[in-house]
Length: 149
Picture (cartoon, helix red, strand yellow):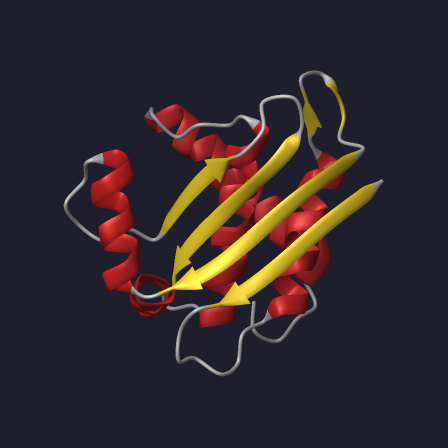
């Protein structure tokens, strides 16, 4: 398996849990199938932005006039190749609301976006619950011993 995972920080935040985010993305890619076959290779770029940037992107690409936590862009149809734009501002607010660490929320968003790249959607309540279950599974699979989970 060849996974290329790059994390770019376009914010003022200094400490980003790059290794943990990479590992959770790898867990999802190793554990899931794409078009009924194992995922042999993937390229995933994670770009951390602020609410201003993600609001503009959400408006331009999805016609939603508000910031959001993550926007996923699959770049290829024949392989797993895509970009995950995560708002660090919204992730920090959600972490506080949910009573979890920012690291935990970033791992959850990385797992969520990767599941979207593979083909999952969250358009219905049942689909949202399934994605949430899978996010928990892939985070806990590797980080159940971590202090910040």
